[in-house]
Amino acid sequence: MAQCGWHTVAFPCLTRAIVSQLDQPTAGGQNRRMGWNILVTRRIPIEGIDLLRRSSANVRWHDEETPLPRGELLSQVRSCDGVIITGGDRIDAEFLDAASKLKVVSCIAVGYDNVDLTEASRRRVTVTNTPDVLTDACADLTWALILGVARRVVEGDRLTRSGEWQGWAPTQLRGVDVAGKTLGIVGAGRIGVAVAKRGTGFSMRLLYFARRAKPEMEAFGARLVTFDEILRESDLLCVHVPLTPDTRHLFGELEFRKMKPTAFFINMARGAVVDEAALVRALRERWIAGAGLDVYEHEPQISPELLQMPNTLLLPHLGSATVETRRRMSVLAAENLLAVLEGRLCPNIVNPF
Ligand code: GLV
Image (cartoon, rainbow, N blue to C red; front, top):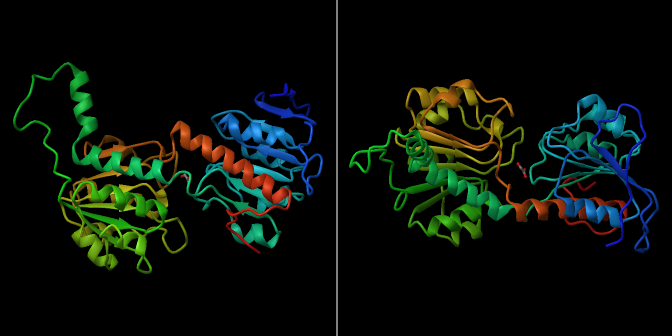
């Protein structure tokens, strides 16, 4: 690979970590235009950056795990044609007003509830996401939560490390069987279907709730039921719906009260699909048996009570976090962005206008 020229950008007020790649040779392509200005707001796997490097773009990269402070983000995006953003970046009217040249917002995520699509479309800014490439990783981690809460994996790990373990005991840390139980899946998108597929290996009764029947779900023997039924019948209930005005606080006190006291609640979708205060109450008062959570209503803040509860398994939003998946997401986010800028077909546009 050609030697890349990375330079610290000479703009004022930049964090140390923002670097730029300038004037890379163009690989050809009819619609290519020299000098697109691209901002990547967070450290992402290098493969996506490499792809951008090979285009003719000028790339500024905030190569840090932590987000850019809002003021700096707004100032950095000012001259940009395209931006790759993460779930922590809020793309609203203020952001879009600050970025008058912007043509594309490329989300390195499948979810894009942090982007105001109406405001973006009004300004003819295309928004893209990275579906498919993360489906298996998210479904796998859903199962890690299911097995983790049902079989008390983390409690077991803590006991083993504590030095207090006295050896095998018949009543010690008993969880519940997963095999043969009823798995309820709310949302029948790609991830919900992949979770159902895995459920067949555990001989489970599969139920799902969606707006309409999904042949992909039925193929795994899952049965479409009402929301009420899925709440009342599930032993393990997992959530895989996007966050929209319709799904915000889909789960509140009323819903948790309908669930079995032996049921476990798993959220791999978005925190605000759940009224977190209601979930805390449901867990504290044992309306349900436990919860496995990867997402929180006010990330990265988590209700302090959740942190204290033994019947919760809490992950820091790791759904797609594997080396292979994040690599694919990085490449796809870069491909999406370049496709839009270069006027090529992009299959992952979420706001066609
Ligand atoms: C992560 O939460 C994603 O939406 O990809």
